[in-house]
Length: 139
Image (cartoon, rainbow, N blue to C red; front, side, top):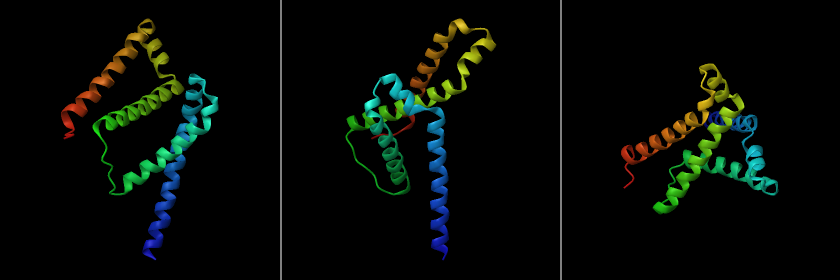
């Protein structure tokens, strides 16, 4: 009985978190925006399938002890894909909320928007490199 209750609660929690993730992606419009920018409407099903497969694979790998030994070159590519996803997610969030234009107008520095964006990008890159090269023991 205890295991059945845990299974129901776990499944229900997973549905809620999964629904929230899908709603978040839908509200931000990441996939339609990506299709629009890349002019690849023919690949729409592949975009959707990759998000679903990625979410399911990530969930499976998170909750199991399974590890995948990959060469360093593949791990670099894997990390690049993660960075692209996080960057697109952050860009979509700021685009939806119109954060930068509002902030620039309020601060009176709307002419320096390019410099501000470059500072954020370079800061993100430097912070990521610092984290992965200093704090993470890869070997």
